[in-house]
Length: 201
Image (cartoon, rainbow, N blue to C red; front, side, top):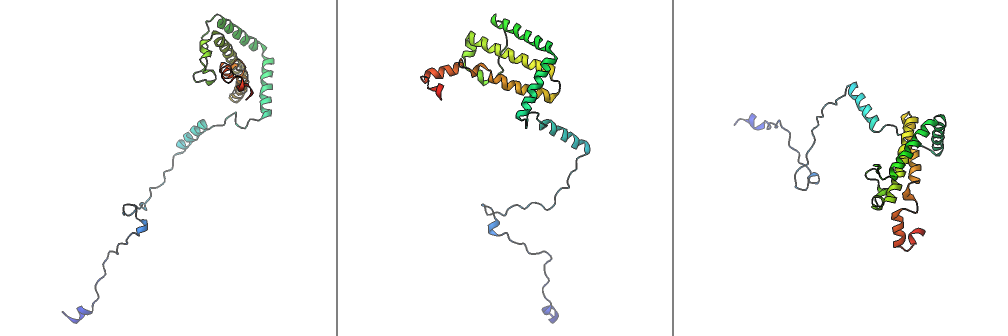
């Protein structure tokens, strides 16, 4: 071996040394955590047509609610508007009242098919279905609510006005429901079971 070959330093490897993963970064199995690739796919830009469709869908799902942020004076405004409509078109009031009277006569004859909506928890007590007296009272109440809503549909054409009028009517109808009176069978049963204590709670 020549003297030049002894003095020549060893050539460095072209590949860098592999760095070890610290133990604190290893997972519970002792394996190194997976590292996400540095390459990210380019962002996709939707066309204007696709964006427009998305905006329309969002407005339909979470569009403006006519009941949100309604205040006390707004209720008075809606109530006065309903009275004004009744005064401007009294023939509609008479027409729907006549339909209510006709339905009441059908109820008294035991031929009415009107029933509460499925899932209405106010009338879950079986007495409303088994008793003719309670069932008739329930049907009269539902017939009145039906004609009120039908009258609103004919006098309040705008969507927001219609929704607000029906919302106010629903509040009034719920307050006048037979379940909110002393003849409520559930309340009477609790009164008897508790010896009258439920009435003073």
